[in-house]
Image (cartoon, rainbow over all chains, first blue to last red; front, side, top):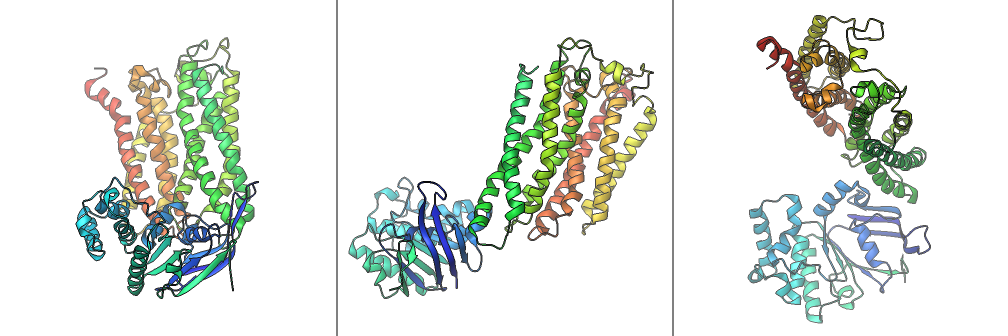
Amino acid sequence: MLIELSGVSKIYNQGRANEVRALSDIDLGVEQGSMVCLKGPSGSGKSTLLAIIGCIFPPTSGRAAIAERQLARLPDRFLTLHRRETIGFIFQRFNILPELTVLENITLPLLPLGVPPKERRQRAQELLARFAISHRARFPAGQISGGELQRVAIARALINNQPIILADEPTAHLDTALSREFMEIMQQLKEAGKTIVIASHDPLVFEHPAIDRTVTIQDGRIHVP
Amino acid sequence: MFLNPWSLALSLCSLIVLVLGAVAGRTAVRVLRFWEPGSDSNRQIRLENAIWLSSTLIAYGLGFQIITLILFVLAADEFCQVIVGAMCATGALLANPYGMPALLIKLVGVFFYGFWILLHQLDIRSEQYPLVRLKYLTLLLLLPLLLLDVSLQTLYIAGIKPDIITSCCAVVFGESNGGGSNLLSGYSQQGLLLAFAGSIVSLAALGLGLGLSRRWRPWLAGLYAAGWLWFFGLSLVVITTVISSYVYAMPYHKCPFCLLKPEYYYFGFALYGTLIPATFFGVSAAFAGLVRGRPGLAGVVARYQRLAVRLSLILLGIFSGLSFYHYLKYLVSGGEG
């Protein structure tokens, strides 16, 4: 298993009046090269689970390991480094910086790694060509279409060749055609060996043939029908 | 004498450090009781989060406490202006029974606080939290020293009365004092200088041997650390009895504190500012070796040891140059000018 969660719980504001139990006793395994969809209504705990897998924060209890290493519990200085090398994120609203050009947005994750400018540009050009947006490289990201923006977000998630891609409600703000296009790209990435976890309640995503397994989350627990 | 900028700065610094120490002390007790690196329990994960904040805060706190040594000496130098008979920090520190012990504890504290910060820095450079227990155990042992440090400082400041008549450095360290109260008056200057120069050469040889050899030799590092401790004590004596009078250009003026005054271009800060860190690095090279075998630390410690030896040698060179500057100037030019 590339991603292995056992007994994972997450409680926000633990011990306070506004305590919220977001996840309870989650066991989940994701094999390398597979695509898993986390399905469930809003507030079910999908994004929290994705954030734990993505080492954004540690679980309250339980084990969340990537390639047998508990990344989220590494000391901070190592955590950032390993997360950068291991996980690519695609956010719901893509979180692209509109003032920067498309090329600058894509190369952004490489800046703290000290990758030389020439190599940064070269890697970005390859991804721009792969996603057919080379002609937009010098455009400010705020001036491109929604579909192009989505491809920029995917390119940014892949720029460091991370083995794991996490996407949180990636099609929530896309029309049907763009959602299909997104899933086609995910399928290609899966075929290229990437491990993909998508949190979504969009049928276009969880019913897509490329999805190997759909995990339903309800009230912070894995729902077994 | 609390209503004085120096006293307020010192007291405020120490108060902050004590609060940080109390917070970290609470974490230390929890770490010693509940730390289980292999566990996935809620308590262990909370502890892992808590130690980050506690360690960072107390590392800064101890860093502040190291800085209070400088503040304390500057404060004593300032107090001498209002104490009858005091001409420099010597008189001010002798104005009550807590001054000199406070200074000595602060000086000892600089090394112990520094070693703790070093342990912390080594610990956070490994992915496996290898020194957490040791770090917090030593922190608990350090807290009484911190408390003693702050208490003596507070008692000293509280006990300063402008109407007390105290001694000046000429009486305390001068050769005219035949009453046996000057512990340094019996040493021969030539003998001290020879021992000083010999120690510098020996330390440099040991350091170069340690730094240049491919394999790290713990016994040599231990010898180097012991050499530095000896050299530190000897240097304080030599600065007081020999070097200071060449700096003042007055054979009977011997004082380790007047060197810090502006009329001597703050020369003492350069001397002590190289001697204390040099000693710390020299000793810590061996000290760090004690945790070299902990998981994930071999490379980190080895790098630190090499760096520490290099820094101690560089600082030794600067300190030696500064120490002999006025003496050699005197030999060449025959005195002032």
